[in-house]
Image 1 (cartoon, one colour):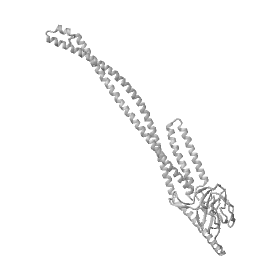
Image 2 (tube, helix red, strand yellow; image 1 turned 60 degrees about the horizontal axis):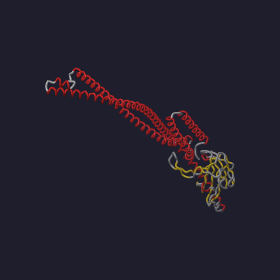
Image 3 (spheres, rainbow, N blue to C red; image 1 turned 90 degrees about the vertical axis):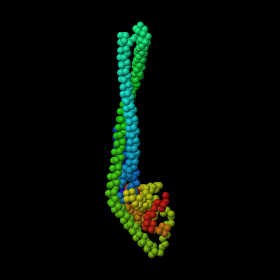
Image 4 (cartoon, one colour; image 1 turned 90 degrees about the horizontal axis):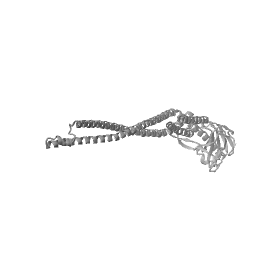
Length: 440
């Protein structure tokens, strides 16, 4: 017995599928020819797919676990599980986007540093060329001045003039040394001028290479900045997506918490129904025991290890939910699922699992349309079975039925999650796991 109607479930699933198709189609249209957008939409599609898959799986499971809950509460719980499944995916994508942004930022900083170094070298080479050009100009001026002075005879232009003009030996030596010094100075100046000219030719080539490198680095820097901006926007989109998921999860959780009191009240009512059923069965057993003792009969009955056959038309028999305690996903404590849910489809035939007498065939609150069959005794104990959530019944109270006889048709009456058979077995009035008692 559980909460969401099949039409609502199928409608929700169809809407979810339709939304996913719309998102994918929009993504394909927007991302054509744009790899950056394509990556972003791939990420969003992955998050949406993870969320949809988890929510769909949760919806199937929560139909059984949230027994007696309202449809909206089951849907909210399923959505919350979907969101919680999508959050780690979004977190991984955000981490990847931030890592990519950090990588591109580092590369942009490295390119910027290289550009700064290249521009500094350009300034240094340019300043060196300018200084050398000024030095070359100064040398050319000095050489011209020496040439003019030699022309005027101010520098003792030759050793011959030094001999002819000398008035003494000392004067000759002085004049000769002055002429040689002037020649050496002029030769050194010419040699330095040649070296400066050659060095500046090389520096000019280096300057051209540096300027070409600067142009390339500027283009690379612009491209890297643009790439980093795309990555920054992608990271921000991932942060926004993650924040939206977390906010939505908080809203779903708040709604679920607001329904806790109502859910506990519904479950308390279901417990009261189960207690009333147990009391009714106890009264049936009491009367049965009185009649047996009055007749002086022993409680022999069947001794078969598996007294029941498959009560559904699905062959082989298919179990969708086990008997036993299970943790309530919202309230956080264990509750007994008192029967086994067996797969059937709407209005499929339901058969008596064992021969017996129909104790009642009537609507019973959360159980829906219920057929209760009294099988007498099994291994000395009272044995009964109930068939719940039927759409209709074809037997009535007091009617004897054979094993495998048609007793009604499956449905989703009561607090059913959809068309299925909720099959319960009672030994001495207490529920037991039906599954081991069914011959497969």
